[in-house]
Image (cartoon, rainbow, N blue to C red):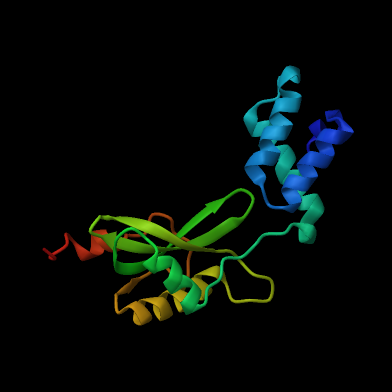
Length: 172
């Protein structure tokens, strides 16, 4: 772990750990950065301190999982400000959570997309790609729209998106 942790006051350590335990990475990084900025610590170093705390606190970190059942996802989809044209899953990742899958509704009228769920690796559960594919297919079937996941088995954040594969909309 970074040696900078020892330079933090006890109150700041408690605040950082509280943010990490609630999986509030950005807030934790900000706390470290603000506290250590007078010592010349940059944002990247502050992030490394927080990554170390995630590793130290391990299983105690509470990372709420988005629901993946069809009724919950459908409720989110219908609340979006547009007509759902497709359901899409795509890979993303960061230094704390590793790879995860975003489940989105591709919208028309107005064009755009809406976030439905973030699928992280769940202890004892299927890989995030498989879980997202299952939930996405079920939702798409429920809504009567296509489902697209260009790379369900291998993380690829540059895989072709649905609109790229589908081409321009033919709807009026």
